[in-house]
Image (tube, rainbow, N blue to C red):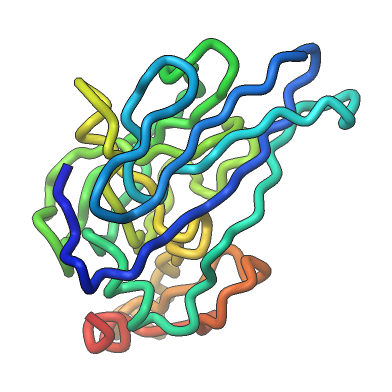
Length: 213
């Protein structure tokens, strides 16, 4: 895992995952700082921006994921500064897995990088983006293009090459499909989760993104 400099802002998220029929709580914690934090179960290294999952037995019927975040971003500049990678990608496929323990679901989204703007990613690279929860909850859709603000997973083994979205859902902007009128112009970017609580623009241009890096 690449360690951020001391000047980097520490980012933490606390997630609650509600699963029907599970009675034993399990905690997974993650903070962007000098050291990876160990999960309580399984001893997996949890890195920067990894969600902390807590079981909630009060929610009946359907399984879903809820979360609260400690840090909210006040600008694109702040989110870009806190991200290791900024890139446009196209979603290839998604699957739901239990690869940390037997009770915490993760969505693995396989994407192909179209262009990297910050970090080591380049066009044509294929990476996996991790999200805590279920496939039906993911804000990423197969075949769609997005600008993503990413941080390394900080996990061990094969999972070390995975990425988390910075700010959970804050770091997702969908790339608008070009129209006949705007085909010669840069595609616009629309914020996917406008209710994340961050003070971020709902619509930006790629020029604005590049200027914020």
